[in-house]
Length: 97
Image (tube, rainbow, N blue to C red; front, side):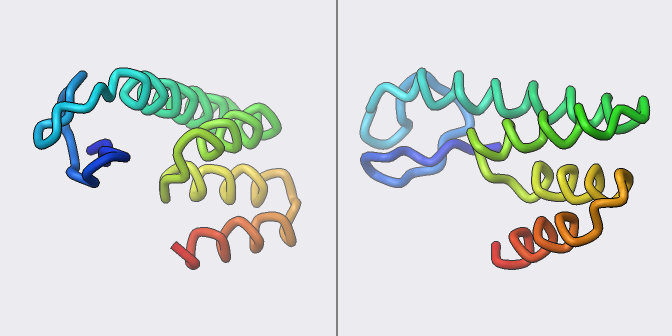
């Protein structure tokens, strides 16, 4: 997923420097990698039936980078655990964009 530069707002697919303004984006790319790793772990936990772990991991991923995939995974984990009101809240957060 492209990382937007906080200085010039250009989307960057590769780093560590911004393609436009040459700002150092190494920390942003590292945070994005952490969010992706957490989301992959959340999906694996969900597939293994560990819904509480999946919810926590998806929440951690969303706290780093709020992506639709992280919010969907969180909503699915909450549905699977029977927490319907929380799943609906996660869905509304996703719909708000």
